[in-house]
Length: 79
Image 1 (cartoon, rainbow, N blue to C red):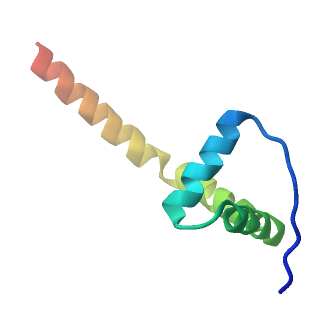
Image 2 (cartoon, rainbow, N blue to C red; image 1 turned 120 degrees about the horizontal axis):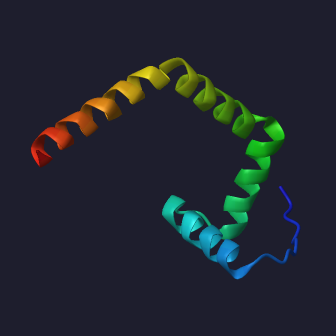
C-alpha cells in the first residue's frame, strides 16, 4: 500500500507521549498514529471504552468492598 506523508502540530508533551508510547509498542510514530486512526475509525476504541465502563459499573461494589477492607485494616494497624 502506498504511503502518504501527513503533517500535524501538537504540543511538546503530546509529541513526547506519542514517541514514548510508540517506542513501548515497538512501532514507528507513523505506524502508531496509523493504528490509532484505524482503531478510532473502526470503532474499536469506543467499544473498548464502553466495555470498560460496563465492567466498572457492574463490579463497582467489589472494588468498593476491597477498598473499605483495606482502609479498615490500615486503621486497625494505626490504632
